[in-house]
Length: 412
Image (tube, rainbow, N blue to C red; front, side, top):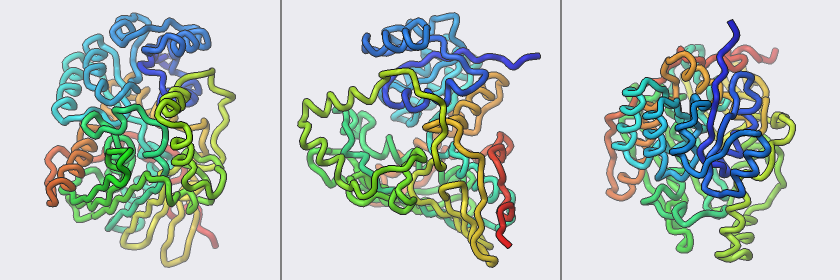
């Protein structure tokens, strides 16, 4: 019996959709059959390039009988209503992070999916990256002993990239807490087993013209005694890609020492120019040849420390440091650029088998709980206990992406 084809409709054709398109079209069993976007020129171009019907709104798309599932990458405040709408029309849902802007909305999304027998997957985040999944497999396997702590930090130009007004308004899902921090929380939760018990954080708004959180320093405590420190700054000064040999987040080489470039570009463009630059991030042409990145994707520096060694995300996979020295643990190379094929694989499995994914609605809700607790802790100056955390489903393909043994690549 031949594998089932999953017919996918895209709701939103902005930067996130453009980024995931190469991974969708490279999947042998996923086929794009429709798209929706509010901009007529964008959807017309997409419809011509992919030879599919396009719609002005989500309501029309989810009514299309040629669509089995949807990918939602619209502004954050629309995620909940559009996910519920899709579920009511019996469409499986892959929704971009953050899952929603409130825990109540997450509950409603999950209930709608349960009521109508469909699956939800929340992504993309960098927790889907092959090195992160391989790191989880090594730690879950126990060969380096008990996990003690995880440290991750990332310095980027995020806050100075072109933004819509709501992207600079925390109440509407703007700033790093809803846009960048979910990557970090998803990664450390996956590596740490998922069950965060409390959050203590400080956040900063350091630029009056970008009046939303641009940096944070957070301490997470897990149920089994694991701790994590999570740091992010999006102010376009220091760039952690320097520590990756100037390989960027998507695994491609970038120009060195361009710190401050995003700031200068926006100041030169002015307010009207920022809107024009933002529009340029949406769909413009059919993706080029499906060539993988030169190196593994990453999201800054991430090191996990266990009883018998440390593990670091590296350019080709993982670097393991133990009593024998340092060894490389390679993982399967990227197959698309950007490589988000693990997201599509997980969504396809969940939608076609009916089994909950690792990054299902409960997982997405738990990650949002941590993000909201970061804001609450910073506002109130206190530790915030958590109650909606869920464990990692290690059986759902965590070890499916190349070698996962810390001794696999041991040098003699």
